[in-house]
Image (spheres, rainbow, N blue to C red):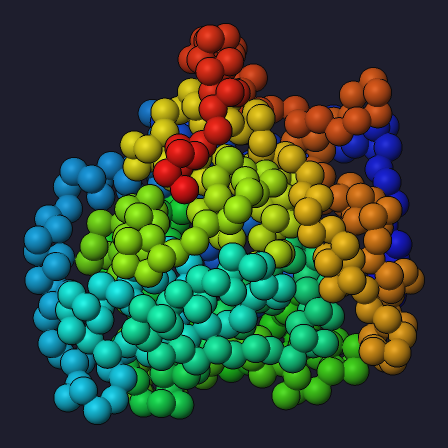
Length: 465
Ligand SMILES: [Zn+2]
């Protein structure tokens, strides 16, 4: 039975803090990278289907010189890599797989956002490939997302759109948010497993994803590899007690929530032997071409009429990234609660590394927007996550409160606020113990004037969109 969450008191959290407790295995001492604004609390990629409530997270490494792995990788990307040589490798790879024009020769998964648009368009028009684009539908489309999907096929691409059974997806998403405070986890499974599954079915041997995971701070040794680790999406054996979706084992989903195997098909990893025998290869396009999010954006505007969100998205200062799913706002917001790093901290760190933003601007923008409450799609979220009796005759019994509402959501936060990150103020409001803006003030790297300027600033694409 899933109990109704309760608000946590100041005493409880202080008691846990004194015993040096941190949730999810996060490092107790918070450190910020000196170059970007990410902290050592940011988790790196992992094999998600093994994750349950007890999983301890591996987080981004900050080296002795105060610089994080993602910044180290970026430095290398800008200075040390021979991009001409890498392009030759790409051409060789394309030559090996390019068909005679009678069929698709590669797959580009994506949502028609700036990055997948860029990859597919380059492959088709610069490298003369015949890509099939495939999409795992968002939870809830935004208008912007729909328009960009249209723009993608208008730019000359066939697209296979896979829309999952929403009843199943809603239940799994509810479990993922109750257990892990991660509304995107089941979606990511569906998305990650889709491309290799379609490749196997259609006999296509080449898949291109966008940026390498090292861009986010995975071990930079991973950035040296053009291919994705196949353990992320395949396994030799699915053990029902050791494979989890939304923090719940497959066995429990079947026995207690009334789900059948076919309900879970989209969310289960692929058979590894089948994959290796079929010679399907999964590459990062970002290995071959210098990855720069803003350039991808301008490219997608120029070649595909890519549209941005009409307004700034809550939690960030931008309008051009992650704008196709109403769930994105909540996803980034939950990262802010769990790791103290919201949407702004994540996107600004990218832009700082790429030289599009100064660190001072990033710090001030994080102060302004990072933990902003995502109000705009709240009603949609509540409806999506409510497990009603009629729709879910078995599963609804597993929830003390099947309805997902404002009170439920707010109290649920407290389960995931780690005592080493959060405290309560005298006014009974939650506050982060360590922030990059306090840190910057203390070390005199952010002056009042810089802060004031950045607080007035509306974002680096403000006039151009
Ligand atoms: Zn960094």
